[in-house]
Length: 120
Image: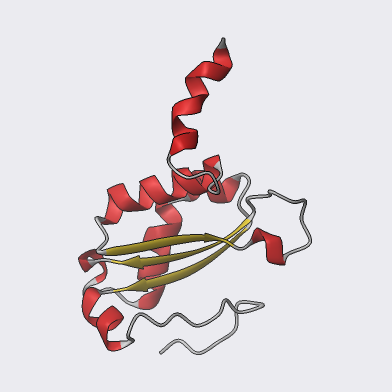
């Protein structure tokens, strides 16, 4: 049956849905990150239970060396273009170099309610 073909993925993580798995694998392949976190924040929004619509990603990678914040965000958005044009309608991005990540002690500020905030 077709169902049997889909089951191997479920072993990876019971809590992660298919979109979260896809986001994680694409970012890992694109940026070879030293640290990667993909958080489904959908439950904090007015969407059905189990939705995969709002994500926060934390990507720490040498790929971001010398890149402005807006360029880093664009790089991440381009990798996830399929998800963003489909089911995912909010993506909060933390993109740092390993040096910046160490300097911040791995602290990530909460996702903003909207797109405001200072650039530097």
